[in-house]
Image 1 (spheres, rainbow over the protein chains, first blue to last red):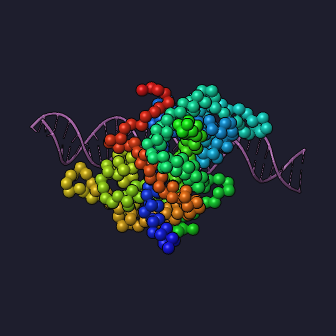
Image 2: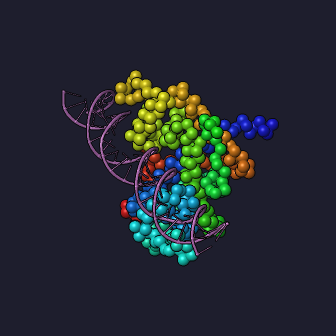
Image 3: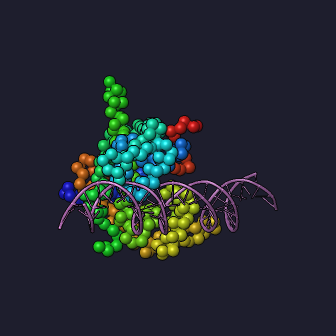
Length: 166
Length: 166
DNA sequence: TGACTTTACTTGTATTATACAATTATTGTT
DNA sequence: AACAATAATTGTATAATACAAGTAAAGTCA
């Protein structure tokens, strides 16, 4: 009974869910771009800025991993931030291969401003939802992100592929 | 009292929410890529394929609007699908400037396969969540996507910007 | 200790996706 | 009929990304 009920509902809701995710992907990025392009910070830089503001100092590899990006990509983004005076490179005393990347004062300010701006945006957006749905959103989004974490040393590869070419 | 309580909780939850959204953005895209790259369909093509499968036939402008992309971008993606035999261009009898784009049989098959693959992926992912959270996710994601809809003829521009350069 | 392997990062190279600008043809308005 | 608006294409340029190759430093093992 219950099992039939679940199967019956799944497909249209799942489709709406997936459609919502795809749209969300686009809109989150666009929102961030709209909120940061005014101060000459690119989207990729912005992602790194915010991650650094949150995580503090770390190596290039560390941030590449956190952002699930290729090392070369991250290395370049770091370089662009350093050049813009938003981040600093410090030698790691324990390992000369490694450098510790940290936000400069200017970078911290910029991150703060971006965070404030985005907070305001999302707060306004969420406040337009009914309370129940707002609570649900606040709870569920981090969970979903976690559930979709497939990029890590211990993560199993994403199953699937439409060509059955295993 | 209640007001204080709300304000007090907002910031850390809002941050987690935003962090989750940023991570979700990355992971939705990566998941799609992982699930479709095996059959020579690029991510952009895939987005269009799925949208066409869902919306049926439409003009180039129509799909550009649906996907919130620039006309030139969409025009090129359509061209790539047509070349791959996945979509067809039909003249619009009522307006010689316009063409009606529709999936070919091959395109419909491909979209079906991708949808099946993604459905399986997300269904597996959601089944790992507790029922309450699964329900919440299925409900909230489409709502969030809608709430963030800022790209349309009647949509007001996204407020914000960190530079107060209005 | 030395040889070899692994790690951290940079740089080269190429691809993908995107938007703004310019253009052409068609349709709509006055 | 003249002009404005619309639909789409093409030109151009940029941003973001990953794979590959290379260098230097650290780790491992005989």
